[in-house]
Length: 223
Image 1 (tube, rainbow, N blue to C red):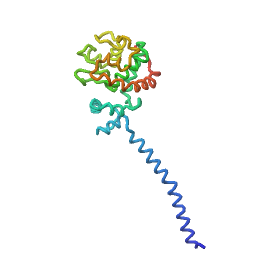
Image 2 (cartoon, rainbow, N blue to C red):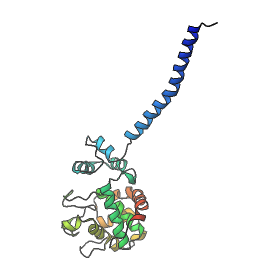
Image 3 (cartoon, rainbow, N blue to C red):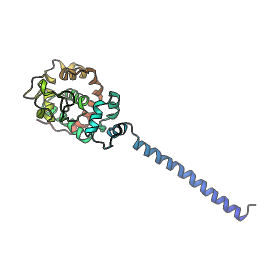
């Protein structure tokens, strides 16, 4: 029969074992939760970490330059969902939608505008030229008739230019492209932009549709 001392030791061992069995899953769960919160493989902060930049979550000048050099794969991973757009860029996207609504552009046209700006700039309003003299969210060029630098870098005005409803400019916008409603969206974007990389717009079509579905209902028309 166990002595009083033996029974006490057995009781202590049992208590320690029980505590361990309870504690280990809690610690493991905490680690999993922490990892999922810090190792998400998308978003601007993830991109900044990958490029050795300060992880601000906003697109500053250094991040913008890095985005310009990133591959399509890196860009699609960075902007994996609509929620990966920082506030300033999301507000520019909402402006594109608002101008489309104000001009009675059908939702398909708004999608095309959104996917175009996503490809051209990720909705960063570039005030300094990126390629040649390209400016703004649509990377329009003053030298090719898209307006003055001030007009191009004013997001509502540049959006009107893209849609083809601005009272100036010599380039055909969206609504001047014959049959645009029945064309593949990427082809329409290329018809307006005349890019050296015509096939790159299509990769953002679903992103643009998700963006319009999420933000469109709360955006007021911009005349």
